[in-house]
Structures are given as C-alpha cells and as structure tokens.
Image 1: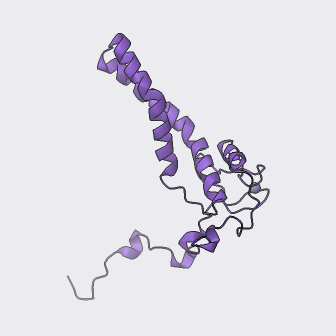
Image 2: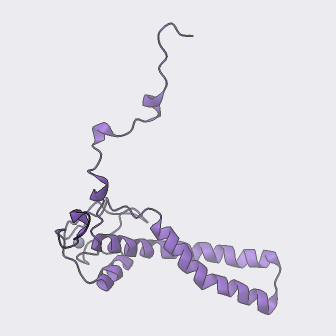
Image 3: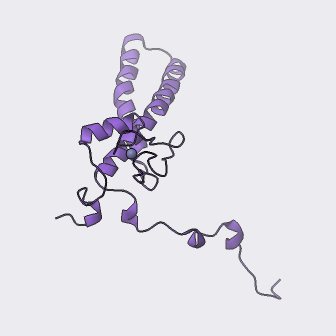
Amino acid sequence: MPLDPRRDPAAFPVTHPPVGVALARGAMFRCPACGQGKLFDGYLRLADECSACHVPLGRIRADDAPPYFTILIAGHVLVPGVFLVEKLWRPEMWVHMAIWLPLFAIVCTLMLRPVKGMVVAWMLRLGLTGDEQGPAIPAAVQPAGPAQLAVRRPAGDA
Ligand SMILES: [Zn+2]
C-alpha cells in the first residue's frame, strides 16, 4: 500500500497510458494522459489543464528536474566531443569557447522543453499532480508584496 493514497496512480482519476507512451507524448509537448491537448502554454510554462481531457497540469511542479536531466544528457553527449577535439587538434582555448559554449547553450535550450515534457509525464504517471503539497493558495492569502511588507513605524517615531 502506498504511503499517500493520492500518489497511487490507480486512485487518480486519469487514464494512465504505458510509461513509454506518456513519456513520448510529453516529449512531443502533448498531454501525457490523452495525447491530444497541449502540455505547454509558452516555452516552459505548463498549461493549467489539458484542453481535451481537462487533466490538471498547471500545478505539477517539476522544479529543477528538467534542467538537471538536460545538463546531464547534454554533458554526456558533448563533453566527449570536447575531449576528442582537444586530443586531435589541440586548438586554442578561445576556439573551444567559441565552439562549445554556444553549442552547449543551443543544445540545452532545444532539449529543455521536451525533457520537461517527459518529466511532467512521468510525474503525472506517478500521481504527483501538485496536490501532494496541499491545496492551492487562495488569492486572498497569497504572500504580501513589497508594499505590504514595508515596516510600519508607530506614530511619533522619527
Ligand atoms: Zn489530455
């Protein structure tokens, strides 16, 4: 029995495709549950819910997992190339920087969105819908902005 019944995929009222199908749908920016609706509302912002099956997507918190996996994969793909170029041609350091820094930036930028789609699909498959942190914070209870945080001095205090 799972520790938290909300994390039990069987208890979550969403159809659960096989993990590979869900990951593929996430990588193609589609709803992992149905494969029809959009997963993202922007480059990395999740849609609030699927437009087709209305599964709640916007509260899923992937946090640092997508950048972690992106850097892990990009590093394992590109760093051997760095070593190979250094071993074969021994170019100047500025040549390395001119080649590899933009290449790392481009590869990571292109990979981040599909990797986040797969992470979100994986989390949805595990039943991690964002409710495990408690209910959403109502608008009236949201943290105060800088104006509300200003220190109020008692009257007569200079
Ligand atoms: Zn859907």
